[in-house]
Length: 71
Image (cartoon, rainbow, N blue to C red):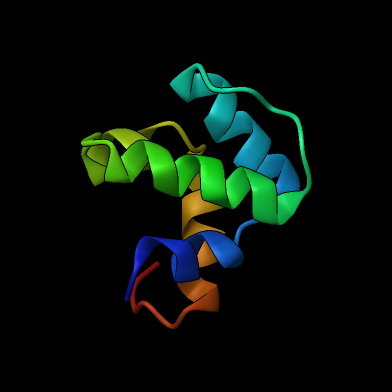
C-alpha cells in the first residue's frame, strides 16, 4: 500500500489536523491536502513522523477502512 491510498481513507478534517502538526498549509480540498502530505513524505520526512501528526483515532479509522487487522 502506498501512503496516498491510506490518506484517501482519512477525513479532510483529519488531514487538516495532520497538516497543522507538520507545519504545512491547511488550505485546499482533500486531494490538495493529500498531495501536500505525500510531497512532504517524498521530500524525505519519515512515514512515522507523518503518522504521528494524526490523532490516534484518525489513524485507527483509516486503518480499519483499508482492512488492517487489529486497528
